[in-house]
Image 1 (cartoon, rainbow, N blue to C red):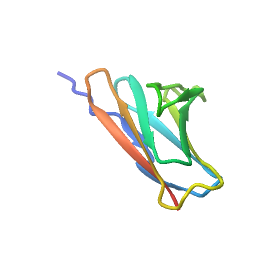
Image 2 (image 1 turned 180 degrees about the horizontal axis):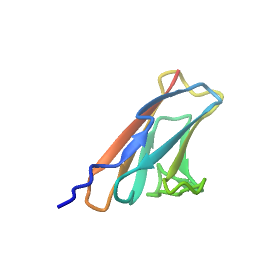
Image 3 (image 1 turned 90 degrees about the vertical axis):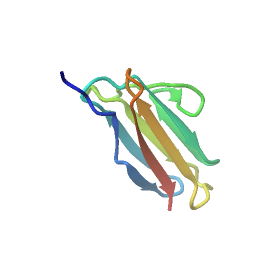
Image 4 (image 1 turned 45 degrees about the vertical axis):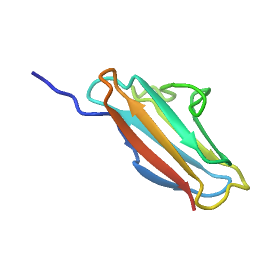
Length: 102
């Protein structure tokens, strides 16, 4: 019996400057089914063209087999604003990452 652990969203903690971008990647020994995000005002979270604060998604942009996630901070994003990204596998296991404006 082989048991795969939950997906990992890496880096698990990241900082982004106002006007900047943080890049994350989700991986799993199995498959990453979808990712979703919550974000404070001034932050956008996307995977491909999908706004992860509005819909589930997991798009591999660079062809490495792992979904790529971008967190972008507006120029006027407040310090301390946070985005949380959660990715899950087909078995309901999940992994989370947090990006904060600093």
